[in-house]
Image 1 (cartoon, rainbow, N blue to C red):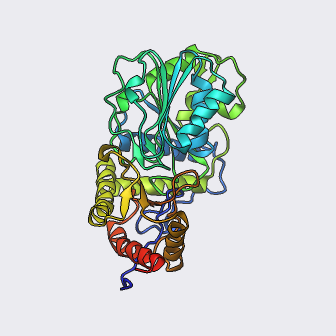
Image 2: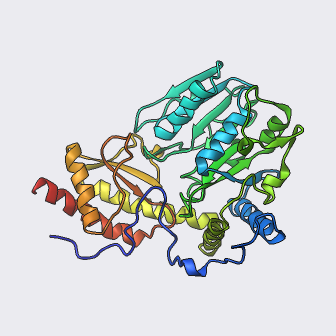
Image 3: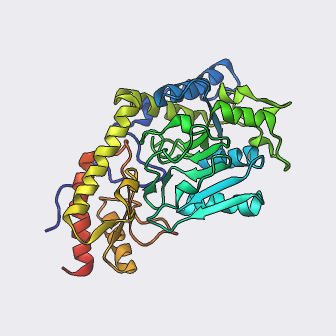
Length: 372
């Protein structure tokens, strides 16, 4: 029978992601609107976004947090163009975004001393191939494949190279071994459901040392420059952004950070994410026609949960369309480069009760499409 209970919030997109429960745009602190981001007020608010992020994530001493242009993409490109080239680099990819970084390293930066390790959707490459004397580039969580790195044990504590990690769908949702990560990037519009266009760049002291001792042989556009006169531009990590940010988006991000504090900080958002994932896992275990795209349970992402169905591609599309028409799930089709399937965002801003209500609808839509 057709389900009767509907998700209160049908937004399960993997980016931009759902706003936090109880979100109300009229509740944002908007005293910075119409003011210069260079004013004392503007700088203070921007610096608070950086320091509050560091405190909630529990970053080690000496790690810096900055707000940079162009979302996670801009932050990661900035890191690659500013830091790579001094050492050989190992690049690990297993889905669209990781493959994009590999393409840029191969075709744009044209690094000759680079090794590429890749795997298909649903799998991880052999991370044990990482050379501790090399720089390493990888995504922590494959947003388009639902496959994540299970832990950081493969990264040596005594490594000589830097680790550059795109963690946009993992930060605030998974426990990350910060001492093993030298560069981490993420965007507001992923796990915290913030607004787009701004990226977060986290640097370890080792990454700062590289910036101050290495000058890339290629020209850097202004929005990529993190040093001046051989020294880190500390202002970037104290609220003096490289270009003009949206102060409305900053207010929205601070609202999300305050919500994180209210649900128990990082431990609270990680617990919410795990609880949401368990709803989907239980459904998959109870139905033999739906499967996780991730081959190994330990690598299954709890945020961007990618699922395959025992249906033809056109039938999968019909399921996605039917759910959207019923207003119970929007934007849950697989990423365009991924195998046909569903992609459910299960990050902390989603309520487990909404996922519980959605699961019977997925079963209903499949029956409607197949006729039984």
